[in-house]
Length: 391
Length: 166
Image (tube, rainbow over all chains, first blue to last red):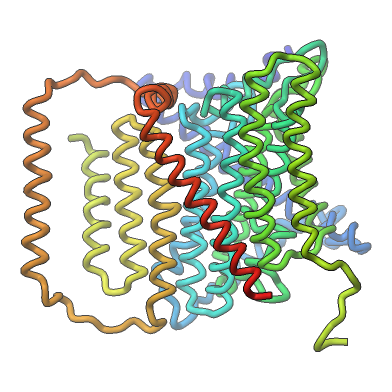
């Protein structure tokens, strides 16, 4: 029974494909999976916009949306109708073709990333041999679409936003990939399915998630920092900082194209969160062996919602960084730690099991971490800020 | 020649041709990116996943962005009208023809001398990794050293600039 429930979508797909001729089955199978992805994740996006507004409202001691439906639950539908019916304004001097293509490229790249995410047992669109590489290759296309949007608008704000976004994305893509390398070293595979399968085993009741190792924990923290920066979210939201450059690279977009940018950005955030879950948090695996009766996709989406909640919490809590602080953090803290983490993963692999391995690996990570943090703090004076031009 | 190959080849050739023909430098880079993506798709069609994804990651993700940045830093914001044909078109076309001739000759010579190997289904990333770690370990190490030096150099440059400004 539990197995049927776990595999219900796989069984349903096989049942549907049974009605088709054999020659058409591979294509139909792919189309069915794509339809599932294209429906599920935008739906999650709609829920997340509501969650985010409610959560931020709660943090800022206000109610959030509460007019449309119970608890304002229909707010995403109202937002969708509004953005779909708004006038599509293109600046007179804009580069029309590039201006039109930028949001399409962003959303297409964001959707492509889901092709290698295993959302449940046997539930992945393609099990690529180089799945993790595919994920990052697709992610790097996003930078190009951001540039296209910022440049084609012919606006100072959008160009500034695009420059900031690209500089930030390039800086944080390096630690993002390096944090992943530690996992790849340990798993010995670039396939996302293999990586999850290795974590879906248990000793007694405890899982073998990579986050429960010294290098895995450090890798997860670094990955999440870099992922926050990659998805341009607070506290790394300089590219769209509302109080400085209004909305950054998509300032000149309105109506449906603006909604596409919004969608693409959130889809990117879900995809990187999904990748963090796949790499460090055991993918679709249950946290305890006695909880494996709950279907695997439920666990994946619960973890995804937990990470989304974490992102919302961070956004409501931390102030925005300055450009130089952002770059310093990337190049002087996150990058050295990611390089060191690769070393720790190697040490962990070759040392015999036991307490000593834990101690040595934790020491290799913890001591430089403290030293680096102290070095970053040393040159700065912390005091009450005095304003030069404002009272 | 399958339909997929024809479509991808057309896309690649059209992209690179547009990169040479367009007037706006940023448009040229974007057209060239289409060519890069087409080449990546051709690699994927040949079952070379690793090369294909690396092509996208390096060329679309990094080289195109670098080119675009270089153009933004050096060009004036208003496009300068240039003549359609360069004054050095004769020399340029001779060099291009020579390069094409050498490449064509090398490919023809290579395909006749080497025996036609049966296609190996799905070279996995594991095999590429093994080859890099055993047979080609020295070139790999040298490349790694070079890239690490470049990375550290970038960090040092960034650090210096910060101290000067204080």
